[in-house]
Amino acid sequence: MGLIFSIASSVINKFFVERPCPFEPQEGITLYDNALSPCARRVRMALLEKKLLYRKVEVNLLKGEQLTSRFKRICPNKKVPAIAFRNVPGLEQDCTLYESNVITEFLDSDIFPGPKLYPVNAWERAQVKMWQDWELGLVDDFVPFVYANMIPFILQLIHSSKESFLASLPKEIPPAKRDFWSRVYDASTSTPDELKQHAIMCYKNLTVLEKALNDRPYLVGNDYTAADLSVLPRVEMYNTVGLYIPKATFPNIVEYLHRLEGRKSTRDSQRLLFRLMRNVMGYTYFTGWVVKLGNWRSGRHLTRFDGSVYLEQTMAKVSSDRSNHPGWRAEVDSMEWDCVLVADCPCCPRCWQVKLLLLEKGVDFKTYQLPVYDVVGRWAGSGGLIRIYHKGHEVVGIRAVLDYVDACFVPTTRFFSETPLEKARVQCWQAWDQTMGYQELAPLLEMKLISLYLVKMFSKDLAQFYALGKDPMYESKFPSILQCFVYGLLTGQGNADVLEKVEKEHREVVVRAREVMQRQGQCRELLRERLKHLESHLHDKVSAACIQGKNVSVADVTIYVRLSFMWAVGGVVEDAKCPTIASWFEHLEETRPHFLAVSDQISEVFNIK
Image (tube, rainbow, N blue to C red):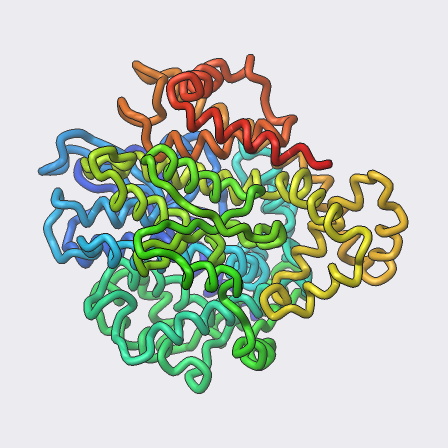
């Protein structure tokens, strides 16, 4: 066992631990990378498809290098990938970009040679971005398996105790992040019940992909596009994290993965170690040994959660699932050809972002009201929530919708610049806003806003509330809805009797809700850090009237709406501590009437009576 441990440790150290990270970009293209990251891999695939030379800098995620102030200067989202361009032919100025889909779209601009990965046609381009949103939506349900079934055992193989692991993290890491990584080491970021629901949703999402691949080689059109290089790295990791993809259930997906593995960019984008894991040892065999060695090294007895045991249960229910509200479909069928229909929920910042852009573009639209519990959980992607219907096309996902609206309506007034670099910078801010939304603001919105609406709707009729858990449309996310409902009950407001009834049947949910609510301060701490970054950026600009460039852009639209919700939640920041943000806010409201109107309407959302 000692010899096996030594070999395994050297392999782990070789790929995940060694090499201090030189963050300073060099001449040409510098990719800030990590072998474990599917997001970084899709950028490697794009660079290989384009046949672009680049230098790779490995960012050690297990040592928290992405959380340091040095890396934050490169990527304020503190994630990989990021990419730096220095003295690159065809590029007028040096730049640094982050977020994988932003980077791949920029690499597909006319600045760089190679095959096109994004279609020119607005509808086909929207389809690519819809698949990117679909992949992003996997994050909420897929990543918990990474933190339960993969990372803890690697950490235990490297560090024999949690204390030694935490001591290895950079001292500047915020307490909220340090607390999170403490729970990662213990494999306690999710409960078994939560992992069960995540497994069901992961497989339900695969049924969407399986159906889309019927009689077609690629996801959009007849050619390989950015949709394929966005989807493949994530789906290919299912087996690694304990979500087996059997050919009998998903024949199209298995064939699709096999087809894409034949591309040189797919093969060369993956380290030799991972190719050996897949093709020689098999993921299950390799990860099994990592689990055994990690437990032996740390003296623990942790086990991996087998999500595949819920595959049959998922497939039995998926045929009766409804992807859309019946009312939405009826509304679409009754619409005139050139009308615009927007799915809307007042508690959702992303819905307001879509409406504000439409208002700024001068577009008339109708809204279809979604119930408030549609917003609960799974904030990373849209979950099908953010959608518009226009001229026979249904566009889903916040980035796809905003891009489509800007391209198709009043093209003379663009909120995404037509200059590739300026557009990419706007998209980086959009990605910054979206990450802030689902990582840090969403938990507060569920505790401080959405939960109160649920209590108002259901506290007098628990039978109606529990009926949601039997509705095929909400069954898989009902545990998240239940926990959100408990948040509202825990705030008091005369609901002690209802809380007592719920606690008798779901004591573990109430315990979990109390634990999460105790971490509110951590969310606020991280939000304050976000605002410091925005404040610094606006302060350093020649003109702080707009976040990016000289004109109001999607960056202003998205961040203005998000901050309107943040201000309403309260307890995050005082205007005096961010004077430049406050000035930017006031300037938009004074010069753009729609911004002020939207802010006033958002304030009304928080007046729950």
